[in-house]
Length: 225
Length: 225
DNA sequence: GCTGCACTGATTGTCAACAATCTGGAGCAA
DNA sequence: TTGCTCCAGATTGTTGACAATCAGTGCAGC
Image 1 (tube, rainbow over the protein chains, first blue to last red):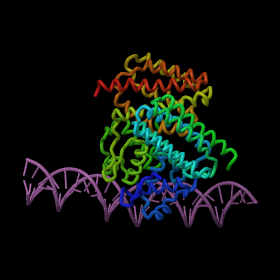
Image 2: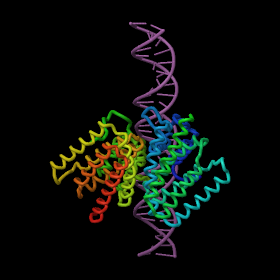
Image 3: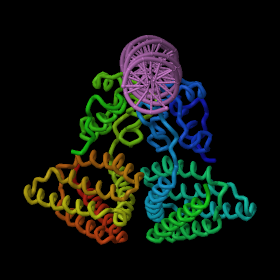
Image 4: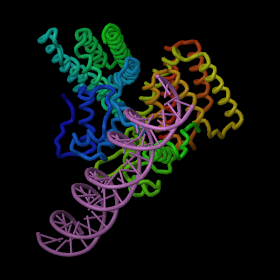
């Protein structure tokens, strides 16, 4: 849990509504494809429709909802084709992030990366089998690398848009197979490539890691609903 | 000019305002860093502040404006660091688009690509020296490849966000050196790689093309304002 | 029985007024 | 002069009412 703390006495109503909506969508409280009734949500959040509409416009920019004029907004449908698109984009962006991180990360940040990996490994060993956190730990790793790229646009794209969609997806497939151990192993290789400042290798490994994850997920989706 | 036609009797006021604002920002009618006064713009567009605020929220999602609560929105400042970020992201995304296009483009689309290149070459030869269109022709080429990727998310990211920022940048540096001929040559190599269905090479060439463009632009910016 | 059309209810889009917040300067004290 | 407080104007944030548009229903006509 690394979300922004919503001290109710901060920011504007639109922004708060935007956060709550994002949360509700990502956690599945609002189902995929569900219609977002302005009146309903406004009363539920205790605000008026004005700020709510602005929040919806913002979520539209994050690709979390789709809006059609005069017909309202709906939670995005994460079908297989869209997920395929998402993983390809992710492969490109995180590959680049990795390359840049290998060049720009400070030694301290790299140390942090390894600490993260160790903690992650302990969690896996401790709860061998039932690992709920895997996704969050995974996000932390990828997020740290994005930060390490020092590329603000890359960071915004990944953290602000793609990762939300990914979390949304994971909340729904969390019951499915994990492959945490091979993922951890790959993470380690990536971190080592970064530590050795080998941008080419770091990018290659990250891309392979992500396309591998997609192959695995896509296979699972064949046999499951 | 391939923008959406704004038949005034279509869509909603927010959307129309959004288009007009985008246009105004990209063409420089609204200067970088300029403050966007809601009252002023609303009267200028002949609408009320409600739809205008929604439009601004949307532009914020496209990274064309930055908003700070209670202080208003400003046109984004395209400083060198941001442009560097932009070109890196572009390199990653268009590289991937190229790889996917090499696999997914139909023969007809590939033919169109070469027709585009030929027309572009004629324009360069015809107006040797003063080539205003270069940017638009360039956009057409890159856009066609994005479409060829068949990846809707990639298309949206490129056409909806990055290209707007790029156009915004070009409107300001259009008076600077061009390097249209080497760019055309590189375009041709890319198209040929796609025609041969060589995704690896197509991606490599596109990435080299874009990072080369950045080196050139960044050099020019050293010596100019 | 089926098609087409008007009506109705609900939902979204828009507006103008009101409240909250920020910015800049006048006035005063150290 | 410098620094502070406080006020006023302007700007943004929010609201509730009003207008426009859409989806579903029932009826008339064929």
